[in-house]
Length: 353
Ligand SMILES: Cc1ncc(COP(=O)(O)O)c(C=O)c1O
Image (cartoon, rainbow, N blue to C red; front, side, top):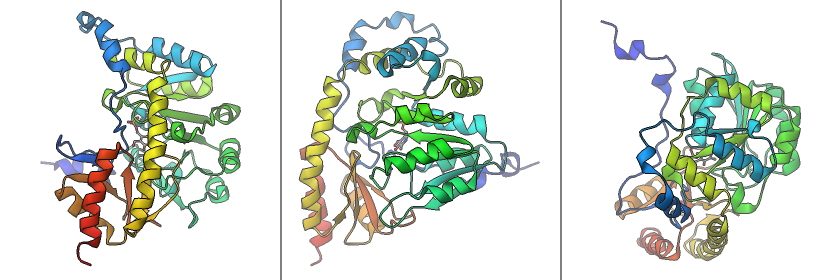
């Protein structure tokens, strides 16, 4: 009998799905950049009005209501918007739509691991161009690759920096293939490259409700691009891909940003609180344009991450990334959580001294 290993698609054996969430209510989860300042209050408001007795019905196939709301928010046409079950869904969709087996997906490295994962899953070849030591981006090696698909994360996860806008713009306008411009963390630094994305012919500007909007559990993301590109993506999108309650919440959230704006201010002030305290413990802390801090640990990174986990605090080990040996990523959170982190870190970094 043929083994399952032989039956499954050949690229799957070499794939390790990145694993982020540690689902324990007792742990402090500073490892996945979700919004630790809480659930967006519009969720409760919508829940009070939502007609749950209609959940027997399929949702609107393409989430037309939300597409219209997003279109009016960004002064574009609904035909330039596509909705996904989290922005991860759209990353998968993009690889599925544009990569034939063996086609190249090119991205800087280090960056968000799922670009590579979905490209490989969809039988693509991955080509990564290492960032400069200061995490700046050189557009030429990427452009020279003439890849079918490029992926740029702006600002970049996990390095936390915003790439030079003119450099990103060059990639968007000169790249031969399709470019994913992932602006998942743009809200945290006020960066928005939508007009550059729409000026280029083949950029897919990807957004999420999982970070600043505090709705990671509802799985909502969207992308904006020229109609011709969105039409291609819609050919391969699963019908009924997002549920009707999440759609209703997202429609409210995109309009009511009062809470999101409060979160953005708190993230900034908690970054200012945490940075000097980590530095006092011997960490090198990089500037951030996101809701997390990238730091070089004074003690071996993987061991620190493991020890913290047994103490009930999860942070992200970045040791496996090029340029980031010994580095860790810490999601910004309300003060009490950061104080627990600092107390544990003090014990683990200074304990033996
Ligand atoms: C850069 C980036 N893009 C996309 C995502 C996926 O977000 P979601 O699928 O929750 O929308 C993440 C999640 O961590 C991310 O860091």
